[in-house]
Image 1 (spheres, rainbow over the protein chains, first blue to last red):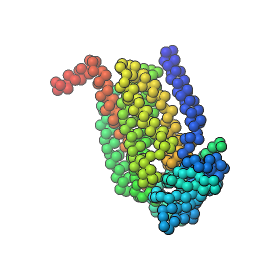
Image 2: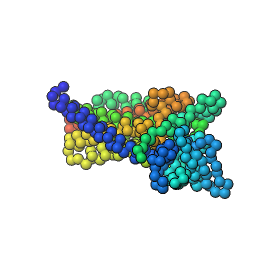
Image 3: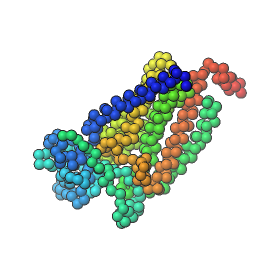
Image 4: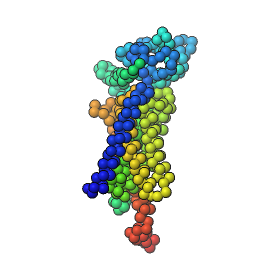
Length: 158
Length: 235
């Protein structure tokens, strides 16, 4: 390798290292902003101010969904397997919404700790399988859970 | 290189068409419906290969740009230039198909989560690269500036890949590219991998065709191109 090329190689690697460090610092600094949603534990811990709009993500607790007979209003509990938060929503739910399914809701929390959503999105997990396999796994009790998706990644400083 | 590309391209085209047909047939007809999403999940056979290729093509572009910057190899620059529009197309396909799937499944066309946003940034990197090339007066200056952009932009690739692990996102985590066993049933995985192969050959086929054209364009004044042109017109 000629000295000239060596110099250019050094220059390119330095440039990459520099940009890499800058990106790492930037991404780390905006950590809280890049997080799409807060977990229920986060919300219960009081890291989100009442009245400000934010997104909450978690699993719909089995057996907690209560639909209003005369309107589209629906109430349910959202959990990250640590804490849970009561959510109420008045609108059309996505197809994938069901008990045990992960969702992300946009809304705000009131002083009593109840979350009122203006938008509910379903969060799909990474498992794909045919219906028969899902049934078989269900019977055997080996169904992969959506828990992994909602490991508490948010460590937001108050 | 010109000759090698000429021999490779029909082979690649054949492999691409064959695997595309098999992959699409297995994916759209043979593979069973998903237990939760029904038939809508079948867009994965386009979406995932396109998204992988969008990153793969960028890596090819960044590495050949680095090689060009350091060793000043002209062919490395040609490969990078030829890759950019192909990569941009793969990225656009990944974003569009993701959007079509997102509407019925998530309930929204678009959300500014880390995965979607970083993939959009990738599209802008490709477009920026193409634009920068077009904007500069001299061939050499353009090549150098664009190569630097391509190398710098490579930081985005790990961000795209790990975005679903580092942050809370609406996009689901990886089903296949992880150390664990794939979270996908074999009857769905097989057509997906065939489609990935089809997209790979599609890229390399396109690359070969474009590289040939670019070499001819750049070497238009050289004697071997003139001889080749003469052969064609006389024969």
